[in-house]
Image 1 (cartoon, rainbow, N blue to C red):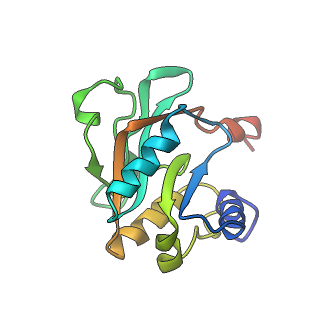
Image 2 (cartoon, helix red, strand yellow):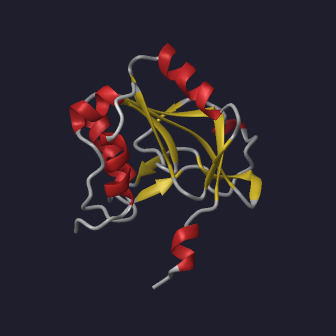
Amino acid sequence: MNGFGPSYNRNVGIKSCSEKYIVTMDSDTILTKEWLSKMVDFMEKNPSVGICGGKILFEDSPNIINTAGGGLTRPGIAYHRGVGNNKNKTKYNKILNTIYLCSASMIIRREILDSIGMFDPDYFYGHEDLDLCWRANIAGFDVLYYPKAESYHEENASVKKFPS
């Protein structure tokens, strides 16, 4: 399927710029004032990091985690870490290598995209971030969860408007 979903649209944006870092956001995501500076500073200090994502909190419950990185179960089912936990829980306040990050708010080093390719437009909606991060991991780039950069997400806000 090569429709005009998030992957396709992110790729349009990526192709239109040549910056060192690419930030992806969903239309229902709000970044904290210092999110970008924290992310760029972290990436500059950690050149092995290809993709980085911060702590994403629920927009309507700003102390509750929406995602703190993601993993895969043995059968290959993707899951968000930390969903429903308090943002101050020590377990979710540590930098962590992770399988994937939610593209609702993450930063990608341009050279990673030049190496592994962009978002696969065959993922019309959902799991495009898992695919991209999986490919980055396989290529040997670090994919890290960085909890000091927080954003707020009204998960699936667009989908709720058009459930069919």
